[in-house]
Image 1 (cartoon, helix red, strand yellow):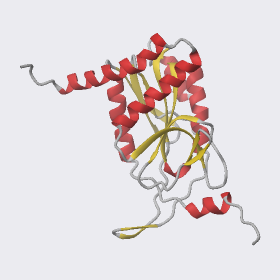
Image 2 (image 1 turned 135 degrees about the vertical axis):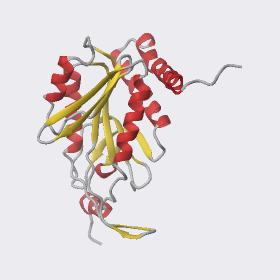
Image 3 (image 1 turned 180 degrees about the vertical axis):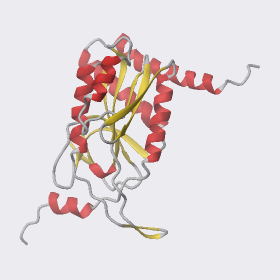
Image 4 (image 1 turned 180 degrees about the horizontal axis):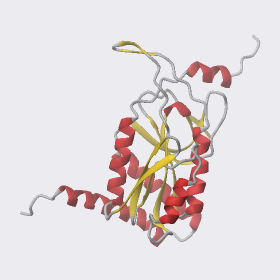
Length: 249
């Protein structure tokens, strides 16, 4: 009978399974647009399977109660438990800004252009208006939650840089606007990064080359999501006031 696997072996097995699923797209799908769509779906399925069930994972637009809308985001991690609605229009999903915890762009290779592209997408979400109101719980009336900072990041299969997290990567992180800053990311074949931002405008970058990049990324992401607590109770009537027109009887 085989011995029990170590924790390291379990995480390596997890990474290998996920890397196989993500890597298949490069070998079997030749058309770039199709390859991107397959990769997005694989990343979404992987995150949905391994994040706590309080979170939903979708490709979506993000909207606010004033009628503004973000760019379409490859992966939106949003609240499953307290968010009262997600709107559909055709095949597109529209998620209220208050329910969003994190947004990620999915690309095949990590490079400066893709990081800037992801930053622009992330900024379009962070620019949205968010409400927060009091709500009732089994403890009585709860004060409105402080709005959390929405996480943003970039997920890729590969990296165009060698080494993956050298000076070009550091420069791309440090020159990103505050609104579009990247907090977490993963290059599945190489490693992952996490950035902690402190005032006034300094970034503490923790990048790790590892053969269990996907497993480490998921664990770091879960920890960052946990530290954010729950989504605020949104003012659903503000959405109604601004989104539903009244007519004369």
